[in-house]
Length: 116
Length: 113
Image 1 (cartoon, rainbow over the protein chains, first blue to last red):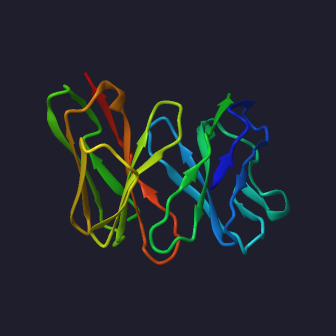
Image 2: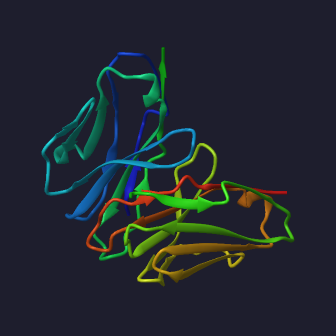
């Protein structure tokens, strides 16, 4: 069985603060894929990053960075110098490599509020 | 063009009504998905279509009937819904080469009265 845990239900920060969203996953598969999605109030899930289990390199994209550690089964997401537009629900998700059909297992999400 | 378009954006329907949700993508993706999302919850997978064929049905009640008329379109036909079916219904699509990112539409906010 697969499971994704986002222990932080809600986080509130002041603009320009750095914030880290935690994600811990469980899977028995040796090949798997991890994702982060952003869901603003408009409802659309916006893809942020995909990482496969063989690629533990951390990634930076502008103010966003991701820390993937297989040893602790974690895939944490950091926003540097947060902005009000970063306010959204952020979901971490896990997929196995089950052929061409895959199912995303989502964490419960973290509501990030960035205050001016 | 990385867009998935869903219509309508909002829908209110009675329990005896029949309605359809529509989803369209022009990214050449051959996998399409329906997810259901209740308030303050993560999305839950309902159906997956691969090459216009239903490949995954997550034990969804028959009052939800999916249809994939062609590689760009995905419909969800609704009939005799219950108030607890009120939710945000999200459509997504992805490539069929391995596990790639899924692109989501803005969803249809459905209220069953």
